[in-house]
Amino acid sequence: MTISVANITTSTSNAYVSGGNTAITFMSLCNYSASNVIANVYVVPSGNSAGNTNIVMASLPLSTLDTYQFYAGGEKLLLGAGDSVQVNCSANNAITVTTSYTTI
Image (cartoon, rainbow, N blue to C red; front, side):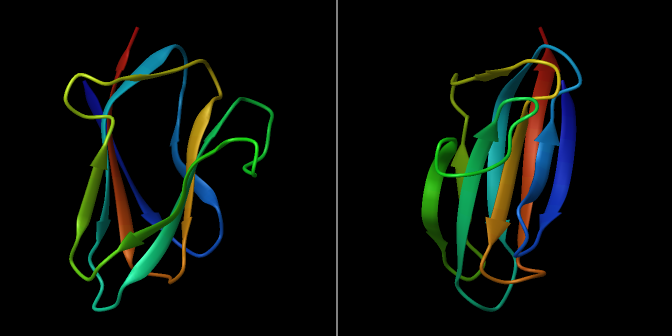
């Protein structure tokens, strides 16, 4: 397994990009800031853009020093080459996304 870490800003950006056929086995969003924030998470097929057609978590509230885990406990998200998970949030320098994945 491999780990990827990304700092998230108010601009939608890649939290993880699949380099081939991979499975995300764990992902978390951690609000390390002193303020509450709102996050949006998108699962984007290769060649597409983040938007309403591929949002999987909309307006997820994260309290100060809170962590939200998904794709844990046996769940997996299967991605092909170039597919990505993209995230944005309501404040810069507030959220870190940690992803654990494996090649399949």
